[in-house]
Image (tube, rainbow, N blue to C red; front, top):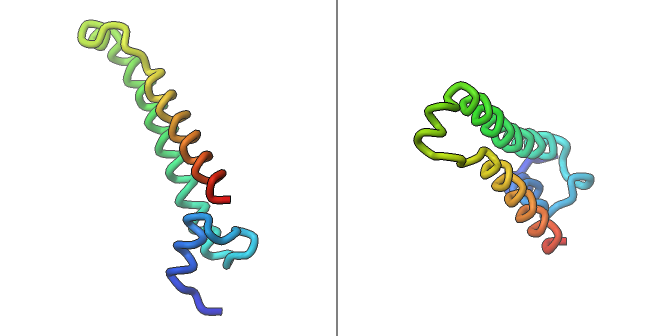
Length: 89
């Protein structure tokens, strides 16, 4: 079996079903998507940790600005991604 980069792009962009694709491309795509999700969750975790450490200074500067903005951004990104996948299929 030959591995083609164009097949990887098709798997990564969900043009080809992961059940029909080469297992190596599926594994690499899965790692990419899991790492992206990990980056989002790590950003949220670090912002919560940073907020606890610098809570008094943050309140002086930003007032009552909340970490909920990051969570809303993540939910919005998931909704947009899901809507794109729904329209594709």
